[in-house]
Length: 329
Image (cartoon, rainbow, N blue to C red; front, side, top):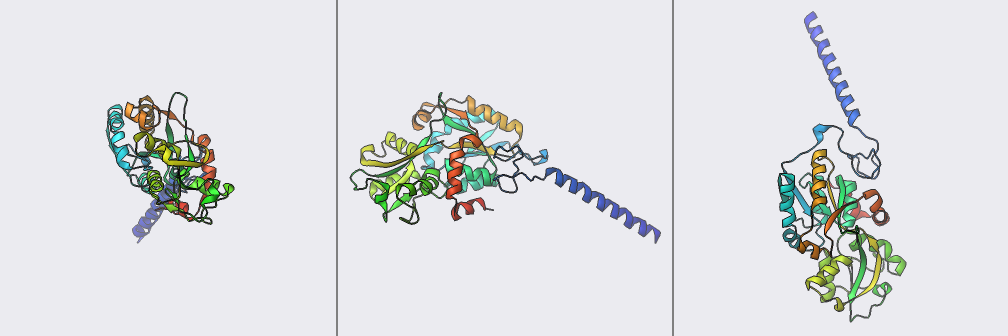
């Protein structure tokens, strides 16, 4: 009987000790500083992006890295364009690099959040959702010797149309690209009303799926107007896919930063340091330089500073669709 009592006491002590250790471990890894991030991500230093997990056992150092690029146009275009860069990264980092062509901003964000993609190029608006809802850590953007040139939200109509101002599009067919796009959705929701056109009230946005589809839709007459990124329009003109004189720009917004490259917050510090080095040492191929409007390199970015306007626009325009993306499992 005494042995049984003694054994019970020992088991109780061990259980209590184990609970105490687990509680201490939990407390050491817990975080009250989330900022705008979802609760599983910590922002103790206030830089507005997710911190590296406190416990090194939660860090990842995969032998094969999978990456993706913002599907603002046909993904096949970038699959070919980035082949030399993917090969370069493989040699520079000494591990296999795989490019994964995602079909939507939502899919790209989910892939990073779920660990299926390790780093990615996010479109301007989707970057905010990726940072807040998927633990993305922005570190590089395309640029040249002068830094980042950016792009503008433009409203395109056919040159022969009668539309002269945004207010003329009330009750008409207006294309947005996707719910997570800055120039293709968030910015028009915020900027168009002051020009006399209220999305959702004066027209129902038609989601085309991408900027190039919006532009081609205006050309075909499927849409009366499209809200798109100026750099996408410029690239399509330079490729000969559309003629500039076939369109008229009736609105131009402020300059926004271009798509940003970000890695998952839980990659090891050595891995992310090497990734940064390889990015910033890379010189664009002639084909990449031509495709990206003269940009010839990657330059560092400060998300807290450089995305201030974009975050403000996303915050103002944030509605049910954006909340669904942020609340994704």
